[in-house]
Length: 436
Ligand code: HEM
Image 1 (tube, rainbow, N blue to C red):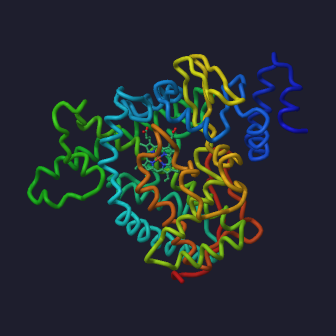
Image 2 (cartoon, rainbow, N blue to C red; image 1 turned 90 degrees about the vertical axis):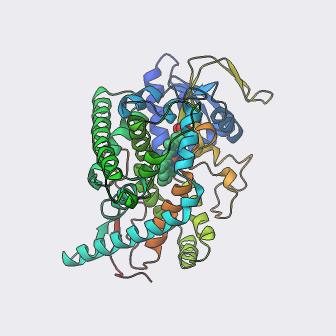
């Protein structure tokens, strides 16, 4: 039975069953269900909020922060970070100030150096994983645990400046915060408490790093401080009158917030992009050929972003409607929304809106980036987009340069979440020791 027929057959009074069916379909029948919603009920009111599934409407929600705020997860995010953060605020309430600061700290000029850093760390991780597998008499290794997660954490250490924080702590603590803030929509108290405690641990670890870095900066030989994002933040003095200064405590919130925006996203995207490519052998072969092109990586990168359109890290982001608003005004789907309504901007659906995106189900690596919402959209679109555009494709590229490292034939889709919301294991072959 189609989703909507099954949903409508449940009495409106039985909200719990309607929500259970909705969640089950979102999980297992995502694309077919979203296609049905886009066609039949593009603005879909449910007991857990209004799902907005067409591209122009998702753009409208995400670009109108004075109506649709991040109030759904903002307070939990700040509780976990133990202080204010841009992704928890809107407009003149700190958002534009801290976002402008972040854009200066994460500039477009970082693209090439971060790409080179990622290449080095990824090659090293692949060498280690292959050598470890061989030494143990194995022919495979775990792509998530031995490659994607540690490479992302090492980038966080060297680029963002989590200097001497253990990489395992960066990965597992950021996962707990991510889960509590963005996944735990029912606000399960245990997951919430775990996230807040993990955020405190990260805060305290970073406070130690900042103290050591500040002490080193005032000692002889201080010129020799690393040019990482933390170093930039500690050196930056904002002109008077440009809002709240970023003292050490606020720098702490910024840095930990960047980690929350980065670590799980990068680790998962490196896995899902490989999965999507590996399940399309012809596209994989083309991507492998392009991976060898060092001079211009843009054509290769198109394969990675197109692969992620089929499996984005953030499929949907919630917003809180704080003023009466007519969504999609003047169209047949025009809907009046009242304050207090939770609105889900479904980016994974929007990227397949057949009224806007040409042949949405075809794999087309040369699509306009305008139709790719993997890095979000609008007021809160990813402020780390320049490093993200270097890190994610380069992690995948270093793998494709090794013909012996590929998902197990027949198990290309076998990402193992081990009962969590994040991929935990993905078995790949440990064939070649050196890049091709
Ligand atoms: C690695 C791949 C990445 C992906 C897939 C990704 C994805 C996203 C998405 C979808 C959003 C929008 C969230 C929403 O609207 O609710 C976002 C926002 C954000 N991202 Fe990323 N991101 C990545 C990397 C990074 C990096 C490297 C950083 C920083 C170093 C970062 C920092 C942030 C921050 C601070 C925001 C909030 C911006 C604001 O509130 O204005 N992200 N990201």
